[in-house]
Length: 261
Image 1 (cartoon, rainbow, N blue to C red):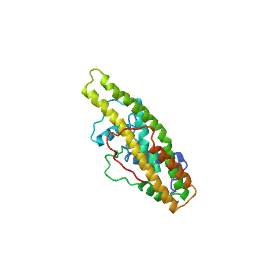
Image 2: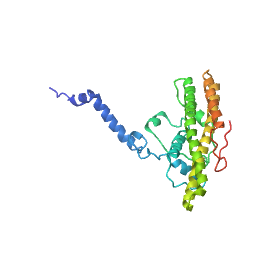
Image 3: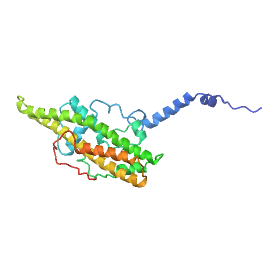
Image 4: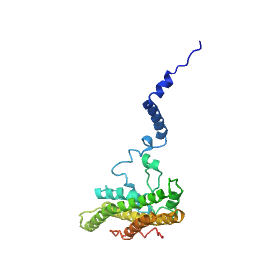
């Protein structure tokens, strides 16, 4: 009589879906761990800290040949940088899976970028991405614009506080006894950092408005829909806010970017 195969091993695995999930998870962990600094590709833990956006100031000043301040960040200055990053990062710049797993990285300031701004990049990506229906493209555009509008007020409220305190800091410099050259330089550098960050965000918002308009125009001629009116209204609202920011950040240098459209 021929020997029967032993089904117990495979049957045991099949009958325990949790075991299968555990094995698959272990394999994914091993694979993704080699591709990223953190578990399952998430942003590494050492990136997530109170000063994770401190680099914005150093990037802004360094890109125009200035030295960044060695002073510690105040709570207001830290908040300014935290609120600036989502407005500086290009809208809808990462696929959905990266939004889950994380791909945080510093971005070059507009003064360092040598490639001319292309207002069509956002729209082309939006149109080329596979969508279930043409209305979902409009909905994505509307969501991106609405996110910017939602972020606008908190950022500029923070900017108002920081710039007002910098005015007081500047006025106090001549009153401080035995002010060393290093302290003077760091105070001035920090004020320049803060101003450049606000200017950076203002330029990014101008770019976003231009990109959103180009994308909407192409959607209208390719897949016309009444929902386009909602997108146009929101873009107009963001454009009006961007053209009249609630705080006037005097540029440390001349405007590096001219955005039309």
